[in-house]
Amino acid sequence: MPSNNQRNNELEFTPTFGTQLHIGVAYGKFDHYRLIDCIRLCEYAPDETSDKAYMLGLEEGGLNSAEALMLARYYMFNQVYFHRLRRIYDYHLRKFFLKWIGSIGLDRTDPFLGLMDLTDNDVLHSMQECISDNNSELKGLAERIVCRNHFKDVYTIKDDDIQSNPTIIEDLEKDLITEFSDEQICICKTDKGPGNCNFPVIKTDGEVVASTNLSSVLQHIPKIKLDTIYADRTIVENVLTWLNTNMESYKKGERP
Image (cartoon, rainbow, N blue to C red):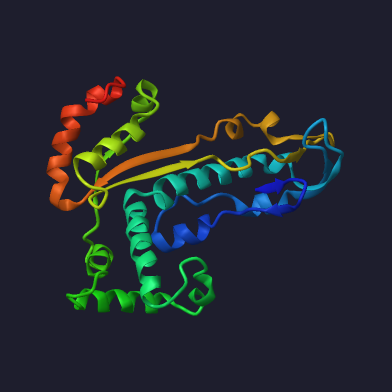
């Protein structure tokens, strides 16, 4: 979408088409031909305190396509980029990577000094070597990814939970780690806004107005908030039992 601020004017098209093509979903489809055809340069002041400046905007006829793009972006993030399995693999990959770059001599404070010379094949090959070496301290971390021995999701915080107790995820995180271990429990927190939905639109009479003044859809693109509790497979049943026993107390803001 046209993203305008004091520093730059740019088109921020999310990679919805590429993602839906490679993973076989339809969330990323929208009428990009219509959207591109309606892009125009216009003079616009985003607020009363700003001077008018040239910015990228849309003709009013492209507004529905812009709405479709923002909704496609929301669905793609919600269903794909923030999928429960993708997030836990992110967690395991970070854990492996932070230890691995130290073991191969990269400076953790500035890993980019040598990181750009590495390829995906280098990392995957190293994981296989770690799995084959019973003495490697990275063996378990590599197996999480290569052998699909990832943590299992045991609970996702719901909107009703947060409305009942705004600090429920923090309370659960502290007590679960105390009850079990930070090596066996992971809480992945995702909190992402809808992005910049406010851009100039050129109406049919030539007036330039904010997109959110014309579109109730853009006013209400929801924020994505996903807080999911994951546990090592060896303790999943114990964690589920603990949650079933104590969850109602946490919803009331009462820590047992």
